[in-house]
Length: 261
Ligand code: ADP
Image 1 (tube, rainbow, N blue to C red):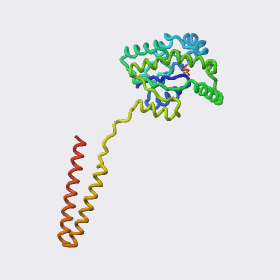
Image 2 (tube, rainbow, N blue to C red; image 1 turned 60 degrees about the vertical axis):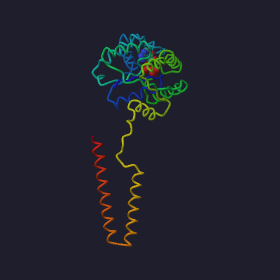
Image 3 (cartoon, rainbow, N blue to C red; image 1 turned 45 degrees about the vertical axis):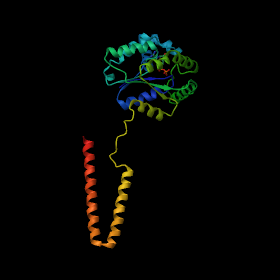
Image 4 (cartoon, rainbow, N blue to C red; image 1 turned 90 degrees about the vertical axis):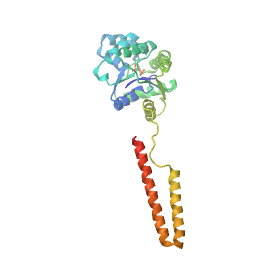
């Protein structure tokens, strides 16, 4: 399965990606994580990206495209992947399309997490508080000024991808403001729509009711007849019950046969 998670910073892409990774046995490819690792390791890419990221701007397309091209060739990505944070511009999306078609691969879908800009600030603020509470280092770009720039970068450069993928018929949108479990369910429904309801094999209730009424009517008739001629009534009732059982047996068999066929 090959997916893209699309949404502004703080939309919950990471949370949903981690869950999908476990559920589908695929890998999460986060360009943000890859770039942070490059910065930490001080590689040439990291040196190029460091200040750009700290300002909340986007790293040049060629840099990120090269990282992703490399990463999706790794053996652990063979079963599938979730791209989180990539593509972030239309040229990156075009490059990804080209990359995948050169490898004979195809996207299974693009999931957009829709979140109002005004709640993103609150979400990042609580992410910062949680990170501090755990005693972990803060991301240099998790502060109010840089966040504003990241949200603007999303609106101006990334949001156009919604139309890009809608045009390809690949887009599914979910409400990213719902509780995490509901977002997860909505994503699962997009990926695996409920199969059409199968026939249960049970008789419709109305037929059962009709059959019960018929039996009740026969019993009542037998009682009336029994008062007039007890032995004839008993044999008529027995014969009738036998015919009923035979008929029921036959119809069940037909159903079984037709279900198998
Ligand atoms: P966010 O929490 O804003 O979704 P990420 O962890 O995905 O952030 O990315 C952090 C930063 O890394 C971005 O603000 C940007 O500078 C850089 N970055 C990540 N992915 C890309 C990309 N596909 N193109 C350009 N820059 C990127």
